[in-house]
Image (cartoon, rainbow, N blue to C red):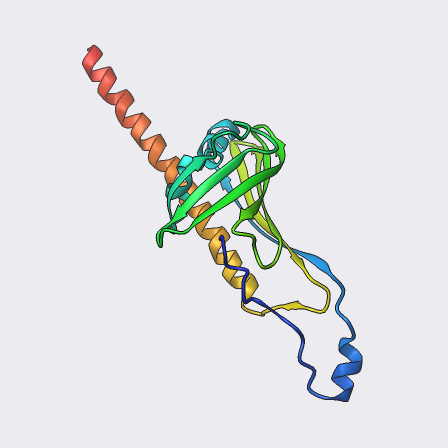
Length: 188
């Protein structure tokens, strides 16, 4: 999701006089796009998958490495995570809001994004599992609008992340079950 906001904003181009009058000046606004999935895993297990930067390569096909930035808080507000993508580019995110085990809001601090945005990770307990929500909040400058293809592109990215989280948790569960079976046989 990093770097995908550039080039997706444009100034409205009125067609005629009536359009010019009806368009007016678009106010600055925040656009929120989010997706969620119900997982049959406890919230603690979901948080342990999504929060450590080292797990980013499992959750994003574009990330090859993730790590906590040394010298920043290990958790909470101010914590920073660095990611390297498949092209070798790096980006740094900073946690700007944090509720341990439940919610983290991050912003990209390097490279500085063309349009400010935040990612919101939310883990909510649910009967028989957890609802994992992932969202992006984009601050659209006054006078600009979002390209019509931007929202579907973001939704696909969010959905892909959630699908990967679901598969990773299912794989971890299968591995634990298999290992338990092996240990039981060894104990017999």
